[in-house]
Image (cartoon, rainbow, N blue to C red; front, side, top):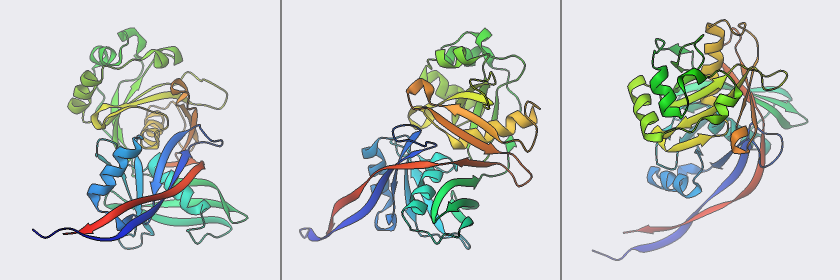
Length: 309
Protein backbone atom coordinates (compact mmCIF):
# COMPACT_ATOMS: atom_id res chain seq x y z
CA UNK A 1 0.00 0.00 0.00
CA UNK A 2 1.33 3.42 -0.89
CA UNK A 3 2.04 5.95 1.83
CA UNK A 4 -0.55 8.67 2.52
CA UNK A 5 -0.13 11.89 0.56
CA UNK A 6 -0.47 14.90 2.84
CA UNK A 7 -2.64 17.63 1.34
CA UNK A 8 -3.66 21.07 2.58
CA UNK A 9 -5.58 20.94 5.86
CA UNK A 10 -9.33 21.34 5.98
CA UNK A 11 -10.39 24.37 8.06
CA UNK A 12 -14.00 25.24 8.89
CA UNK A 13 -15.46 27.98 11.12
CA UNK A 14 -17.47 27.28 14.23
CA UNK A 15 -19.14 29.31 16.96
CA UNK A 16 -20.50 28.65 20.44
CA UNK A 17 -24.05 29.98 20.87
CA UNK A 18 -26.10 30.10 24.08
CA UNK A 19 -29.65 29.49 22.84
CA UNK A 20 -32.88 30.65 24.48
CA UNK A 21 -30.76 33.19 26.33
CA UNK A 22 -30.26 36.95 26.49
CA UNK A 23 -26.97 36.89 28.40
CA UNK A 24 -23.92 34.62 28.08
CA UNK A 25 -23.59 31.42 30.14
CA UNK A 26 -27.35 30.86 30.37
CA UNK A 27 -29.71 28.95 28.09
CA UNK A 28 -28.60 25.88 26.13
CA UNK A 29 -25.04 25.89 24.74
CA UNK A 30 -24.77 24.90 21.09
CA UNK A 31 -21.66 24.52 18.93
CA UNK A 32 -22.46 25.44 15.32
CA UNK A 33 -20.14 24.47 12.46
CA UNK A 34 -20.73 26.05 9.06
CA UNK A 35 -19.08 25.33 5.71
CA UNK A 36 -19.70 21.78 6.94
CA UNK A 37 -19.91 20.45 3.36
CA UNK A 38 -16.13 20.11 3.68
CA UNK A 39 -16.62 17.40 6.33
CA UNK A 40 -17.82 13.84 5.90
CA UNK A 41 -20.46 12.40 8.21
CA UNK A 42 -17.95 10.45 10.30
CA UNK A 43 -16.02 13.66 11.01
CA UNK A 44 -19.25 15.45 11.97
CA UNK A 45 -20.03 12.74 14.51
CA UNK A 46 -16.47 12.89 15.86
CA UNK A 47 -16.70 16.69 16.21
CA UNK A 48 -19.97 16.34 18.13
CA UNK A 49 -18.25 13.87 20.45
CA UNK A 50 -15.34 16.29 20.87
CA UNK A 51 -17.58 19.24 21.80
CA UNK A 52 -19.57 16.94 24.13
CA UNK A 53 -22.67 19.15 24.27
CA UNK A 54 -26.22 17.83 24.03
CA UNK A 55 -26.10 18.57 20.28
CA UNK A 56 -23.72 20.05 17.71
CA UNK A 57 -25.23 21.51 14.53
CA UNK A 58 -23.64 21.51 11.07
CA UNK A 59 -24.75 23.96 8.35
CA UNK A 60 -24.75 22.56 4.82
CA UNK A 61 -26.01 23.53 1.35
CA UNK A 62 -29.63 22.42 0.83
CA UNK A 63 -30.62 19.31 -1.11
CA UNK A 64 -34.39 19.94 -1.23
CA UNK A 65 -36.08 22.50 -3.54
CA UNK A 66 -36.81 25.86 -1.92
CA UNK A 67 -34.57 25.35 1.12
CA UNK A 68 -31.92 27.95 1.99
CA UNK A 69 -29.78 25.80 4.31
CA UNK A 70 -29.64 22.17 5.35
CA UNK A 71 -28.97 21.55 9.05
CA UNK A 72 -27.74 18.32 10.62
CA UNK A 73 -27.33 17.84 14.37
CA UNK A 74 -25.56 15.08 16.29
CA UNK A 75 -25.33 14.16 19.97
CA UNK A 76 -22.00 13.13 21.57
CA UNK A 77 -23.02 9.47 21.17
CA UNK A 78 -23.33 10.00 17.40
CA UNK A 79 -27.13 9.93 17.21
CA UNK A 80 -28.61 12.32 14.64
CA UNK A 81 -31.37 14.64 15.89
CA UNK A 82 -33.99 15.66 13.33
CA UNK A 83 -36.31 17.81 15.46
CA UNK A 84 -36.27 21.60 15.13
CA UNK A 85 -35.34 22.97 18.55
CA UNK A 86 -32.40 24.77 20.12
CA UNK A 87 -30.13 22.97 17.64
CA UNK A 88 -31.66 24.79 14.67
CA UNK A 89 -32.70 28.05 16.32
CA UNK A 90 -29.11 28.62 17.46
CA UNK A 91 -27.76 27.97 13.98
CA UNK A 92 -30.12 30.50 12.39
CA UNK A 93 -29.30 33.05 15.09
CA UNK A 94 -25.60 32.66 14.32
CA UNK A 95 -26.05 32.88 10.55
CA UNK A 96 -28.23 35.98 10.91
CA UNK A 97 -26.00 37.79 13.41
CA UNK A 98 -22.79 36.92 11.48
CA UNK A 99 -24.11 38.49 8.27
CA UNK A 100 -24.37 35.17 6.38
CA UNK A 101 -27.99 35.75 5.34
CA UNK A 102 -29.73 38.26 3.08
CA UNK A 103 -32.00 39.87 5.68
CA UNK A 104 -34.83 42.33 5.10
CA UNK A 105 -35.63 44.96 7.70
CA UNK A 106 -38.69 43.89 9.69
CA UNK A 107 -39.18 40.18 9.00
CA UNK A 108 -37.31 37.75 6.77
CA UNK A 109 -38.74 34.29 6.04
CA UNK A 110 -36.38 31.47 5.04
CA UNK A 111 -36.72 27.71 4.65
CA UNK A 112 -34.64 25.18 6.55
CA UNK A 113 -34.08 21.58 5.54
CA UNK A 114 -33.82 19.10 8.39
CA UNK A 115 -34.59 15.42 8.66
CA UNK A 116 -35.62 15.17 5.02
CA UNK A 117 -38.30 17.87 5.24
CA UNK A 118 -38.52 21.65 4.92
CA UNK A 119 -39.84 24.04 7.56
CA UNK A 120 -40.22 27.86 7.56
CA UNK A 121 -38.05 30.10 9.74
CA UNK A 122 -38.89 33.76 10.43
CA UNK A 123 -36.21 36.19 11.53
CA UNK A 124 -37.19 39.52 13.09
CA UNK A 125 -34.66 42.14 12.02
CA UNK A 126 -33.97 45.63 13.40
CA UNK A 127 -31.14 47.77 11.99
CA UNK A 128 -29.85 44.76 10.10
CA UNK A 129 -29.52 42.55 13.18
CA UNK A 130 -31.74 39.69 14.38
CA UNK A 131 -33.92 40.36 17.42
CA UNK A 132 -35.79 37.04 17.48
CA UNK A 133 -36.05 33.76 15.58
CA UNK A 134 -39.37 31.96 15.07
CA UNK A 135 -39.22 28.49 13.53
CA UNK A 136 -42.16 26.29 12.66
CA UNK A 137 -42.34 22.64 13.61
CA UNK A 138 -44.27 19.77 12.06
CA UNK A 139 -48.01 19.42 12.81
CA UNK A 140 -48.63 17.73 16.20
CA UNK A 141 -49.03 13.96 16.32
CA UNK A 142 -50.38 12.55 19.59
CA UNK A 143 -50.18 8.93 20.67
CA UNK A 144 -52.75 7.44 23.01
CA UNK A 145 -52.48 8.45 26.71
CA UNK A 146 -50.45 6.01 28.82
CA UNK A 147 -51.31 4.45 32.17
CA UNK A 148 -47.76 3.95 33.44
CA UNK A 149 -47.53 6.36 36.40
CA UNK A 150 -46.01 3.85 38.83
CA UNK A 151 -43.36 2.73 36.35
CA UNK A 152 -42.58 6.34 35.42
CA UNK A 153 -42.31 7.39 39.05
CA UNK A 154 -39.75 4.63 39.69
CA UNK A 155 -37.79 5.53 36.56
CA UNK A 156 -37.74 9.21 37.53
CA UNK A 157 -36.80 8.64 41.17
CA UNK A 158 -40.17 9.94 42.36
CA UNK A 159 -43.24 8.59 44.14
CA UNK A 160 -46.48 7.95 42.22
CA UNK A 161 -48.18 10.74 44.18
CA UNK A 162 -45.63 13.19 42.69
CA UNK A 163 -47.26 12.75 39.25
CA UNK A 164 -50.40 14.69 38.33
CA UNK A 165 -53.44 12.43 38.00
CA UNK A 166 -55.55 15.02 36.14
CA UNK A 167 -53.52 14.47 32.94
CA UNK A 168 -51.95 11.30 31.58
CA UNK A 169 -48.41 10.78 30.31
CA UNK A 170 -48.45 10.90 26.52
CA UNK A 171 -46.02 10.76 23.60
CA UNK A 172 -46.42 13.82 21.35
CA UNK A 173 -44.39 14.79 18.30
CA UNK A 174 -43.96 18.02 16.35
CA UNK A 175 -40.97 16.55 14.53
CA UNK A 176 -39.47 14.55 17.39
CA UNK A 177 -41.56 12.24 19.58
CA UNK A 178 -41.16 12.88 23.31
CA UNK A 179 -42.92 11.47 26.36
CA UNK A 180 -44.62 14.28 28.30
CA UNK A 181 -45.02 13.55 32.00
CA UNK A 182 -47.13 15.88 34.21
CA UNK A 183 -45.92 16.37 37.79
CA UNK A 184 -47.85 17.84 40.71
CA UNK A 185 -45.61 20.83 41.39
CA UNK A 186 -42.23 22.46 40.86
CA UNK A 187 -40.72 20.69 43.88
CA UNK A 188 -41.51 17.32 42.32
CA UNK A 189 -39.91 18.34 39.02
CA UNK A 190 -36.77 19.51 40.84
CA UNK A 191 -36.62 16.33 42.95
CA UNK A 192 -36.50 13.96 39.98
CA UNK A 193 -33.35 11.82 39.81
CA UNK A 194 -33.84 9.44 36.87
CA UNK A 195 -32.63 5.87 36.67
CA UNK A 196 -31.32 6.24 33.12
CA UNK A 197 -31.46 2.56 32.02
CA UNK A 198 -34.97 2.11 33.44
CA UNK A 199 -36.17 5.35 31.84
CA UNK A 200 -34.60 4.39 28.50
CA UNK A 201 -36.50 1.09 28.53
CA UNK A 202 -39.78 2.87 29.27
CA UNK A 203 -39.17 5.38 26.49
CA UNK A 204 -38.45 2.57 24.03
CA UNK A 205 -41.70 0.84 25.01
CA UNK A 206 -43.69 4.08 24.73
CA UNK A 207 -42.13 5.15 21.43
CA UNK A 208 -40.61 8.36 22.79
CA UNK A 209 -37.12 9.75 22.27
CA UNK A 210 -36.89 11.78 25.48
CA UNK A 211 -38.87 12.52 28.64
CA UNK A 212 -40.21 16.04 29.32
CA UNK A 213 -41.21 16.26 32.98
CA UNK A 214 -43.34 19.34 33.62
CA UNK A 215 -45.73 21.09 35.94
CA UNK A 216 -48.32 23.72 35.16
CA UNK A 217 -47.77 25.22 38.61
CA UNK A 218 -46.62 28.71 37.57
CA UNK A 219 -43.00 29.27 38.64
CA UNK A 220 -43.28 32.97 37.82
CA UNK A 221 -45.67 35.48 36.34
CA UNK A 222 -46.32 34.92 32.66
CA UNK A 223 -45.00 31.34 32.65
CA UNK A 224 -47.21 28.38 31.79
CA UNK A 225 -44.93 25.42 32.57
CA UNK A 226 -41.77 24.54 34.48
CA UNK A 227 -39.83 21.64 32.98
CA UNK A 228 -36.85 19.30 32.91
CA UNK A 229 -35.80 17.12 29.95
CA UNK A 230 -34.05 13.75 30.10
CA UNK A 231 -33.02 11.75 27.02
CA UNK A 232 -31.03 8.63 27.92
CA UNK A 233 -31.88 7.08 24.54
CA UNK A 234 -29.22 9.30 22.89
CA UNK A 235 -26.94 9.72 25.91
CA UNK A 236 -28.27 13.08 27.16
CA UNK A 237 -28.58 13.04 30.94
CA UNK A 238 -30.36 16.41 31.08
CA UNK A 239 -30.86 19.25 28.62
CA UNK A 240 -31.28 22.89 29.72
CA UNK A 241 -33.60 24.02 26.87
CA UNK A 242 -35.36 21.68 24.46
CA UNK A 243 -37.35 23.28 21.66
CA UNK A 244 -38.23 19.90 20.13
CA UNK A 245 -40.02 19.03 23.40
CA UNK A 246 -41.47 22.48 24.12
CA UNK A 247 -43.50 22.35 20.89
CA UNK A 248 -45.17 19.03 21.81
CA UNK A 249 -45.84 20.30 25.34
CA UNK A 250 -47.62 23.41 24.03
CA UNK A 251 -49.74 21.24 21.71
CA UNK A 252 -50.52 18.91 24.64
CA UNK A 253 -51.60 21.76 26.92
CA UNK A 254 -53.87 23.15 24.20
CA UNK A 255 -55.36 19.69 23.50
CA UNK A 256 -56.06 19.22 27.23
CA UNK A 257 -57.64 22.71 27.35
CA UNK A 258 -55.14 23.96 29.90
CA UNK A 259 -54.23 26.80 27.52
CA UNK A 260 -56.38 28.37 24.82
CA UNK A 261 -55.34 27.86 21.20
CA UNK A 262 -53.51 30.90 19.88
CA UNK A 263 -51.90 31.78 23.20
CA UNK A 264 -48.10 32.08 23.28
CA UNK A 265 -46.93 29.41 25.75
CA UNK A 266 -43.97 30.40 27.95
CA UNK A 267 -41.87 27.55 29.33
CA UNK A 268 -39.04 27.65 31.87
CA UNK A 269 -36.32 25.01 31.82
CA UNK A 270 -32.73 24.50 32.94
CA UNK A 271 -33.04 26.03 36.43
CA UNK A 272 -32.01 22.80 38.17
CA UNK A 273 -28.86 22.78 36.02
CA UNK A 274 -27.96 26.40 36.74
CA UNK A 275 -28.73 27.24 33.07
CA UNK A 276 -32.07 29.10 33.25
CA UNK A 277 -33.82 29.16 29.88
CA UNK A 278 -37.09 30.59 28.64
CA UNK A 279 -38.84 29.18 25.59
CA UNK A 280 -41.89 30.65 23.87
CA UNK A 281 -44.15 28.47 21.73
CA UNK A 282 -46.76 29.99 19.41
CA UNK A 283 -49.88 27.88 18.91
CA UNK A 284 -51.86 29.87 16.36
CA UNK A 285 -53.58 28.82 13.15
CA UNK A 286 -50.26 28.71 11.28
CA UNK A 287 -49.08 25.84 13.48
CA UNK A 288 -46.62 25.22 16.30
CA UNK A 289 -43.62 27.56 16.25
CA UNK A 290 -40.73 28.01 18.68
CA UNK A 291 -39.44 31.52 19.32
CA UNK A 292 -36.26 32.65 21.02
CA UNK A 293 -32.95 34.47 20.90
CA UNK A 294 -29.32 33.58 21.31
CA UNK A 295 -25.93 34.93 22.37
CA UNK A 296 -22.74 34.12 20.46
CA UNK A 297 -20.18 33.39 23.16
CA UNK A 298 -17.12 32.32 21.14
CA UNK A 299 -15.89 31.83 17.59
CA UNK A 300 -13.02 29.90 16.06
CA UNK A 301 -11.94 27.38 13.44
CA UNK A 302 -11.64 23.62 13.36
CA UNK A 303 -8.58 22.31 11.53
CA UNK A 304 -8.11 18.76 10.25
CA UNK A 305 -5.10 17.34 8.44
CA UNK A 306 -6.30 16.07 5.08
CA UNK A 307 -4.66 12.97 3.61
CA UNK A 308 -5.23 10.77 0.60
CA UNK A 309 -4.02 7.19 0.30
